[in-house]
Structures are given as C-alpha cells and as structure tokens.
Image (cartoon, helix red, strand yellow):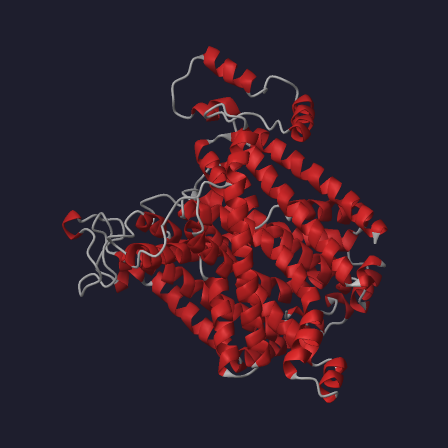
Length: 307
Length: 300
C-alpha cells in the first residue's frame, strides 16, 4: 500500500506543475498588454502604465516571472490584487471557510440524496418508485443550477420566508445553497448507485446470503451496499469536481463570499493575480481530492494496489 | 459498429459500404423507435427546433423592441409568459432565444469535435510520443473541474458569446479526444486496416477512410449529450455576465436579467429556466437512447 501511495503522490506532482504553468501563462496569453487591459477604457499616462507594469512584474523575462511565481506558492505569496492591493492569499483565506462549509454541506446532501434515490430505484426496479427516482435524477442532470437556486430563493425565501436569500454565517444561510448544489450533484450519483446495486444483486454471493435465510435488510446492508460502494466512492470523488464548479455559480446566485464568487468577480474586474490565485487554489483542491479518492479506492479494493 | 471495407480492395466495395451503413442506420432507427423516452426526447427537440426556425411566424412581437407601457406584466392573454422590465414580450424573447441557445450548444460541440477528434485520432494512431504528449495535454485540461477551464479561457479571451462558445468547446474537447483515442486503439488492430496498408493506402487515408468511420458512433452519442451540457454551460457563463450580453435574448442572459426582479416578476426567471430544462432534458433523453441504440458498450 505504501508503494502505491508514494507512486500516486509522485504522479500528482507533474499535474500540479503543469497546472501552475497554465495558470501562470494565463496572464501572458491575454491578447495585448495586461497593464493596458487592467486600465480598460480609462485614460492613463505612460508613467502610470509603466508603474503598474513594474508592480505586476511584467518587465522581467517570462521564465524569471514563472520561477518567482512558483517560489512564492509554498510561502503563500500569490501576488496582490490589482484592484485593492490586498494579498491574494488573504483574499482566499477570508473566503475559504464559506466555500468549505458550502462544499461540505452540499456533499452531504448529494450523497444522502444520491444514495437514497439510487437504492430506491434499484430495489424497486421496474416499479413506479424506480421511474420516479430516475425521473428526479434526470431532472437534476438537466436543470441549470442557477435556475434551481433562483427558484429555491423565490419559494423558500421570498414567499415562505423560511431562510435568508443571501449572505454567509449561520446554518440557515447554508441550507438553500447546499440543497441547490447538492441536488444537482446527486443526480449522477443516483444513476450510478442504481446500476452498481443492480449489478451486485445478480452476484452469486447475494443468492447465497439469501438462501442462508438472512433478512433482506441485512443482505442489502452487509453484502450489496458494501460491494456497490467501491464504484460509488470514485464517482463521489469525481462529483466533488462538479461541486467545485457548481459552487462558483451557487455562490454568485446566493451572494456568498466564497472562492467561486471571488473568481467570477475577479474575471469581471480583470484582476488577473486574483484569477490566477483562485484558479490555482481550486485546481489544487481538485487534484488533492482526486488523490484521496484514488487512495481510498486502493484501500477498499486490494486489486488496484497490485496493478 | 460500422466496418468499412477498403475501396480499392474490390470493385463492389462502395456498394457494400453503402448497404452496410444503410442497414446500420435502419437498425439504429429501429432501436431508437423502441425506446419511448428517446422518441419523446426526439419529438420535443424537433418541436423546439421547428419553433426556433419559425419564431417570427409564431409571435406578433419583436424580441428587442421595448414597450415601457407594458413593463413587468404577469402572464396574460396578450403576453402569454408576461413581459420584462422594458416591456418586451417574454415568450417572444424565449422563442428567439432558442435560436441563440440551440446554436450555442451546437457550435460549442462542433468546436469540441474539431479539436478533440483529430487529437484522439492522431494520438491513437501514431502512439508513442504523439500519444503521450497529447494525452498529457488532455490530462492537464481535465485537471480543471467542469466550468473552471471555460472560466479560465473567458478570462483570457474576454467575455462575449462567441468566446463563451469557444471556451465551452475547448473545455469539452478532452472527453472527445479520450473516447476517439480508445476507439482508434481497438480499430487499428483490425484486419481491414492491415488490408488497407497492404494495398498501399497512406496513413492519412487509413485514418480518414477506414478508422474514423468506426469512431462515429461514440462521437454521435457524446456529441448529442455534449450539446445538452454545452447549452447549460454557455447559459451559466451568460448568467454570470461572461457570455451573451443584453439585449441579446440568450436563455442564460434572460435568466440573469430576471434575477434582480425575482420578488416582483417571478416569470422572468421561471420561464427561461424551464426552456433550458426542456431543451436539455429532451437532448439528454435522445442522447441516452442513441447511446443504447448505437453503442451498448457505452452504457453506464
């Protein structure tokens, strides 16, 4: 297992380096001078332009800029926001809590809902419950998250007044965003749980367990769920990616001060250091989550370790 | 799956290919017709496309003409889906918006196919360093979850509708590259490729005439489901103000306009969202049906 962990950790390094190169190059791939883009339509003196160019470090060779950029990452130096001169790390630090709370709550909703819908559908295969559960899942796949979020705000906040519509702090502000984000992510999971459970139900060991006279609930819990979970965990990890990108939109709709909203605002304001920092942060979280998923997968299924 | 025969191998070959592809398409249609959900999806989609084409005939209003007297009216006999803050008829705007949104989905997927398919084809066919470098690029692109890569590209290209299509297309291309590569890897070992090589076909000809036709089934399936994803992704970018801009009646942009009037004009948000959902649902149903009919191996 240790060998597998080390190998998998080493494999993650080139991906991280490549992600950092892409994020770094982003600023230089923008057509035109980034300093001029920053000023937009505003009139600007050549001196001021030169000053901003120096502040952004654009006067140095590209390789030097990249090396500096990478060196800064372990120190937490991701540059400063062009907009308000705050360190990018500080901007991220202020918002990570909100995003983490949303991601975690949405993950709980997604897993709870996805497992229940998938199980109901598989155990009552071909019945109305199956059709209903899969229809809900199909709705989740086809529904734009920003629409679901707006509808939740309209019904539960503006009409019924049960939850606040926007902002951060307190569990009541977390419910609607988590339900919106979790519901959308649960759809894929529900479909996968259904097919995995159906596959396991056909295995001989399930027939054996039943013929031993075990109660159906025990057969499902001990034999079916445990085996169906291996495939499900991988997708749960991959769904975290959907969750991260969905969070970008959810945070904007609910005006939650998270990393996703920071990114969208920074793109609109052409605040490239913040865009770089936020993208790098989300990509790193995604890479780490995928790493953890692979490790847990190997832990659950010994065959993976010896491949 | 379709197998083509080298044209130069026999004088009857084109006829054989035509017959084979005709019977395949007939078989696919037969299987599609058997799936009620795919049929339903196909019918809804056909109606949506017809409505998009016939938009000016279906409404007496213009999508961009303002009429402040009628502003923020709820659904009524004159304005079936109500009006927006500038008095524009919402049904008309959604109808004309379907032209923009459906086109956006199609163009984005076309871009994804134009980038992803050659990548997958070259990587799978040549292998070695070509394969490794292209697949590393694909892996790198997949490091950015979902809409994040599209956001990065929008940050580089600048926010507008064409750039949004380009961004969505580029970020969807790695999936095409992977699927095509996998398909090419299995096709290139087949005897008909060996036969084509033996009769002196060039690599380009083998790739385009003999291997590419065998990757068409997964491309059609992925492409169909991809249109649904692209419509949602492009609408999301427009909703965030990074795609279509007002007054363009794109569905995501319409929803974004309605966001500030949710308290007083629920219809401005509800109906454009329902339009997106109907289109995406119908395409997903059709795509699922196509997957089962064209390539049962792709079933999850």
